[in-house]
Image (cartoon, rainbow, N blue to C red; front, side):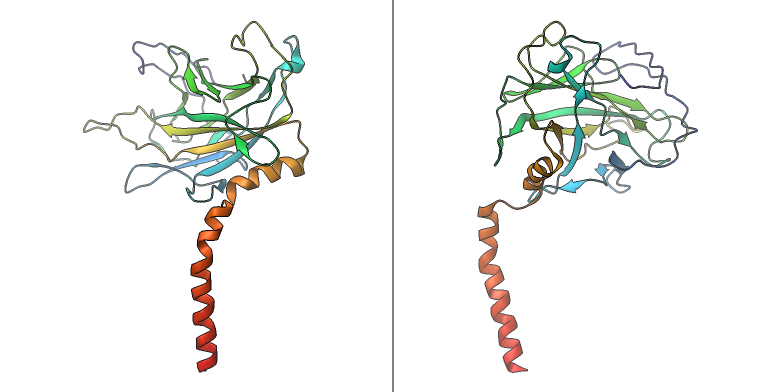
Length: 262
């Protein structure tokens, strides 16, 4: 796991533990390609300010690329990445505030023309939090290890979190001992949401959950094929586009009438 922080996690309850965050002296700006997190000052809701948007929902879309997981046999059947990371500007949070992530929806894969809730060789994606617990994404839904929190990090004195969690592309129910069949080349899609267990001074949660967002992962596709798959998420479905035609017709008719009058 590509972490530079020394985490001392002591879980006293399902969502109560202690962090030891890394000093952020070297990090004072956000990083391109990461999931950039801000807080709406009126609603205290987490908002994501980077990424493309899904048509219709406006949910953000991010990208990652799996590479071979070395040191594990057979390596060709296991893949990993720690991108995209989670980043924010200094001062976004108060010292000690925590940022967590949860898995939503189902794992989808690209079949060459659409995203489907299915995979070629029983693949699944595992997202490991800083306490080494996991959200597991499959076409049937999201499951979690017993004590998963989805913890990303705790804000240090400058209020900025910049953290990268590890994602794994695997293909067996027992990813710790077996590798299963070959992981298929293709594009894979998961859905997540940011939240925080931090309690406000007056009681209740200090922050509202973010909107859901997506991460599309590439495993072995060329850039053109992968970007074509991602682009499908960001453009309206044909049926939605057809619904716009009557409105466009009215606009064209009014424009023509105005030009004739003038």
